[in-house]
Each structure stands twice: as structure tokens, then as C-alpha cells.
Length: 313
Length: 307
Image (cartoon, rainbow over all chains, first blue to last red; front, top):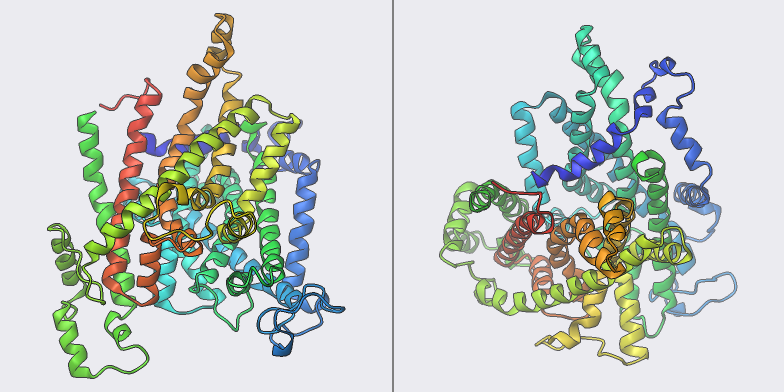
């Protein structure tokens, strides 16, 4: 069935890696020289400049989203209409927006919304998706059939469309509502991958051996299957993080995501977009910050995928 | 083949029902279409009840959904709250968005696959690294930013094209919006083709084709490309739904009165019949596109047979 090719190909990538077996903690003794996937991946990552660049950028973003005051002393909500759309002046390097707010301060404070939506949604999607998909793959049967059909249904709705409809009727406009929506519509993506990875791992000899030795389901899942099915989930989740940030900004831009007085790059870009002819600086700074953030997460995801997916080496 | 298509069509039915019910639930159960008619003011209870009765909203959600679906199958998508039948709105909007999507997909196919082949054949060379970095940048910049920037540069500063599209939206005015809509997917197509080509260049059949003395373009087009296209076709097929949904952003920037525009207006004004009707059609398009992709596999790879 062509439908399953996707999960199969990512699953075979795991099966192809003999080192994966050794990644399970406590199982490492069998081959002294064979490095585990984890140390192999780390070795690969530590030689990549892209990993360091994106890692540093992300670290910086996380720090300023927790303590924005570190690099911006002003208040993003204190604005002076007299300075509306003014260009850069000393102390205000990015100029002012239509309301006379300092663009630099708002750009710095905007990081918090984007980064938290990205991280919360990804965590939620990864936990829910791998739990549901993994259990479906492990137990099979009617639960698997039902879950596959449910994820088909969620796949039938393009995510941006679903987001605009859902968020316009829920009317929350906070980081929580936006993240909850992303988890609601995003989990089937991870669930499919987790299901495929678990099914492949389930058929491996060492799992059969554990079963023959009388290991309980819990033990097999936690000790043997989970560590080996984790790699493809991590890869997809890291790349998805960047997409969620971009999606949050798009939803805020359309007026259904975060709402003022929340400070978000999407809102600022939306408000600046009608003034692009008069004051392009209002658009370019938040847009640049947003793009750089998404770029950092996608670059990290790329580097992690290259390291974890042995098929691509 | 025929039996496979029928089986797939049957499998689509529960998914179609599930997806449309989900949208129906969001619009009619989570939102309140009647309250939306009255704006900020609280509606007169008797009037609201009468409207609810007229719109079949005084029944249970399941009954409302069945009533709605029954009407759809005789071509009645209901009436938008401004009195226009939703079907008329669709007749105006869909041709425009379909044209926009076609332009976007042509960009994806021509530029995306071409760049993918070039970079895949020259893996690790400067061209490859350059294009790869470019695709990363393109993926990272959200559509609404590229949209405004390209509109400003090509429409306002250089005046190569008009910054907004006329109501009839002919193909030549849709080139820039189509490119904007396609950009992110185009970068994905490039990357997918590149990986796929790079994997297959080492395949035995490529070596055989070269050893037979076939000219290079024939090896690339007939042997290498055809075998490398399967993941790309999958992506483009599933992308059709995303493109038509993503047109919300592009159509807003370039003021195109297509599906995205109507949907956006419908959502802003809580115009329930418009929203549910348009989304239902989009879900159907998405499902059919996926079926088409699976059938295309058999064309690309003769080893795949559907019994």
C-alpha cells in the first residue's frame, strides 16, 4: 500500500542502523567498539558548524524570551504617538511603529510568544503523538485501526485552514489557545511516524528475545522499543518546531492567533504591512527576527536529522 | 486498477464524514452563527429563536449535520448571511483559486525539480551548497513576509506587474501571487528531488544505462528522474490541499477574490454556511488529490500494480 511508504521509509532507516540496538541503556556491553547511535550522532553533530550556529542562536532566543529586559530596557507597551512611524534615532535603533512604540523593544519582547508557542506545541505534539502512535503500533488490533482512521480525519483538514476556523470560534488569543490548537491538529503527524517506528522495532530479534524471556509489555516498551523508536520522532519534532513558530505568526497575522496587547511578531508584521511604502523598517525588523528564529530551528532539525538518520550518511 | 479505485473511494467516505463533521462542529457548536448576525448587541430571544428555526439550528448537532449533508448532495450549500447562495460564491471564487494553484504548481514542478536535479547531480559542489542554503532561507521566511516584500519590489518599485489583481484574475496577473504561494513548497520540492536523485545516482540501473552508452540527458530523464520522482509526486499531491488553504494569506496580500478571500471574510463575519461549504469542498479536493497521487505511482513505477 502506497499510503504506508512514508512511515516505512523512516522506519527502515532505523532498522538499517545496527548501532541503534546499542542505544538502549544497559544493552551496550555486547560490542565494545560499536558506538551507540547516541554517541555516533553526537560525534557527527559536534563537527557541524551549522549545529553550533543554530544552537547558539536558539540559546540566545530562549534567554531573551525569559529575560527580555537583559537587552531591551524599555517597555513594549509604552508608546508615544508623537513619534509615529519615525525612523531610527539614537537609543531607538529600529525606529518607531504607527502607534509610536519602539520597534526594537517590541521585536525583543516578541520572541517570547513565538518561542513559547513553538516549544509548548512541539512538546505537546511529541508526547501525545508518540504515546498514541506508539501504543497503536505496539498493540495493533482495533485500537490501531481506529487511531489510523482518526489521524486520517485530522489529515484531511489543511492545518492553516483548521487553525483559522478553530481559533476564530474559540476566541482565546493567548499562547495557550494557540498551542492547544497546534497539538490538536498536529499530533497525527508524529503518531504516524511513531507507529511505523514501533512496528519496526517490535519485530526485531532482541524484542522477540525479551518477550520469550517473559518481559512484561511495559518493560518491553520502555526498555527496548522506546529508545529505538525515538530517533525519527526527535527529527520530525525539531523540524516541526520551526513550522509551528511560522504558523503562529501567520495566524496572528490573519488576526486569529495572538491578539493585542500581546506582543508578537505576527501582530507587528500585520500592522506594519499596510504601511510598507511609508515605513518599511516597521515590517523588516520583526519579519527578520521571525525568519531568523524559524531558520535556526530548521537548521537544527536538519543537522539532527543528518546525525540521526544513518541512511543519509 | 478499477477495484482499487473503488476501494479507495469507499475508504474516503468515513474520512470525508469525519473531517467535515469536525469543521461543522467547530463552526456550529463552538461558535454561534446567530449571535454573530446581531454583532455586539444581545439578540431579541424571539427573533433569535425564529432565525434558529429557519436555519434548522433548533435541532441537535447530529441532525443539523445530516440535514446539511442531504442538501449538499442535491447541490444546495445553503445561503450566505448576505442572501447570496453559497454555490454562487463558489462559482466565482473557485476558478480563480484553481488558476492560482495551477500557477503555483507549475512553478513547483519546473523550478523545483530542475534545481533538485542540478543540485542532486552535483552534490557537495558550490552550486549545491548555495541552492541548499537558499532553500533554507526561503523555508524560514513566512509567506506573508515574502508576499509583501515581493509585492513591494516588483509591483510598487519596479512596476513589472500590478501590485493587486483585478477581479477577473487572468493568468498573467497571477504569476507573482502564484510564485509567492509556491515558494515554500518549491524549496521543499527542490530538497526532496535533490535527496532522491543523489540516492539514485549510485543505483545499478543508472550504471547500466551509462554503460549501454545512452546519452546523458536520456539517462537523467528516462532512468534517473523517473525513478526519483515518486516522493516528489507524493509531496506535490498532498500540497494541493495546503496550497488552496494557504491561499488565504496570498489572496489577502494581493487582493484576489478567490476561495481564501471568501473563506476569510466568512470567518471574520462568522458566516457559517460560507465557511462550512468552502471547507467541505477543500477537504474533498484534498482527498481526491491524495487518491490521484496513489494512482500516479503506478504510472511512474511499473512495479507498483493495484489489484
